Length: 89
Image (cartoon, rainbow, N blue to C red; front, top):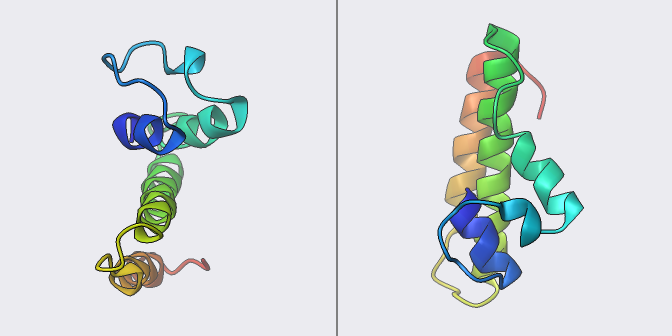
């Protein structure tokens, strides 16, 4: 996710180290949620869903410039994951 976040933010991509120097705090908080807090089923599921939602958000940003990007496909993928896990979105 780091390369996509850097590109979306218009930050220079000079390797993926020290994103805290190139991304704002809000974006960094979102990025932190894409890594599990601990190795438990609940934490891993939260991480999976956070990654999927962030990917969808980044694709939505890109879709503004590229109309061929189909956000409905990503939405269906997230809905399927949530449904299979028996969770609410």
